[in-house]
Length: 272
Image 1 (cartoon, helix red, strand yellow):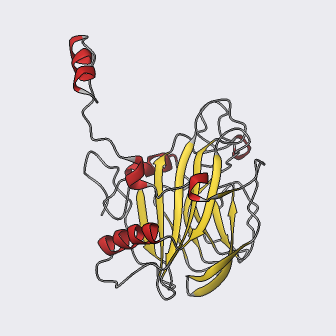
Image 2: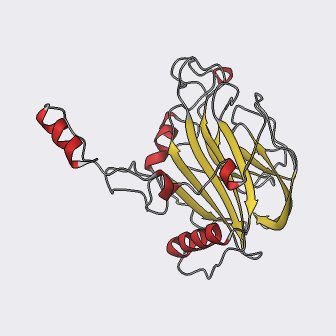
């Protein structure tokens, strides 16, 4: 805030909140049409076409050559996942997927879903720096990344102007794979078809965040999934950065997965 504006607020008797403000650019990787992203269609429960990967991505011990980005907060490997109301993991249908926020998104009512795969040196350098900070014991230099961003997306049946902004970044060096989940703004948890409230976007079956391997055995639920607590995911973390969750995902055992429920961040008090 400029000093003169701050002075006016103070003399007017307004209360000024001096709490630290997260910088959107520091949490989310760049996205949008200026980054040469593609968008999913403006269609309820829409999906991207099949995305053939220029570099295979290993997830839960299996190498994948293609992805689909689904409007309901899903990135699925090799096959589409059509469901919009989340089910508890593990799922028995054999679908491997990543879900930063599985809920009944409807971009017809607001928002966009962007995605791209990239070898842009600037982005790879930033991803590498982040991974090296969170996993200093793992030698890693990113050679490929896939970034999907749900930008200010609405929920099905919405009678509000609420929007969620979150992102999933997949990255590999062809041997080691990581997934970074970023949560900038979460204002709703549930669409009307999942028994949510049309005015609040809350209630019913809330969103799910985590990973499903497709083998009916290996999976991970980010704490708070399918409960009202998922709305606080912008304040929780497993790498001490509120709103960010990071996992090594190339083996059957996820590295970076906490075994206890996260604490809601209070200033700098964040789950480690």
